[in-house]
Length: 128
Image 1: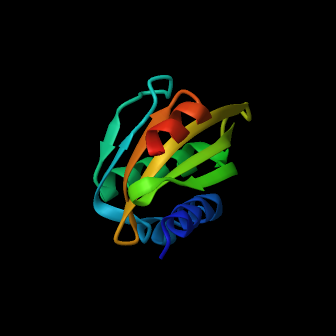
Image 2: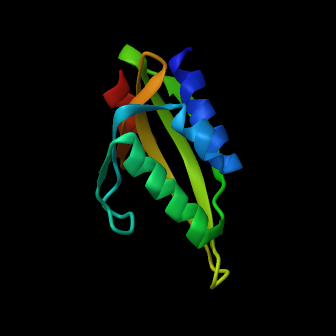
């Protein structure tokens, strides 16, 4: 599967809150470096860690849609994704938005790494 299709499948699974489909897009040893401004910012290592994170987000927030504005394939199986996340708190009802740019590295049809970038331009440069 082309790298862009794998990343799109990841976002589609997230938006459906489908943990089984989400798992199918992730390599066993995937590593997701979260941006420093993310609450409890840290690197998630391993598919189980990412699935636990997704599960906790789905438990805390009643809505977690991601709107992907752009997917651009770079060199070596990398995909630049630019988008907006919206989260609605289950208890508070408060809505938060986050705009982001990331590079998703794909190998053998699975996401192996996710890296945040401050801007779309920086992510595109890094992805070649």
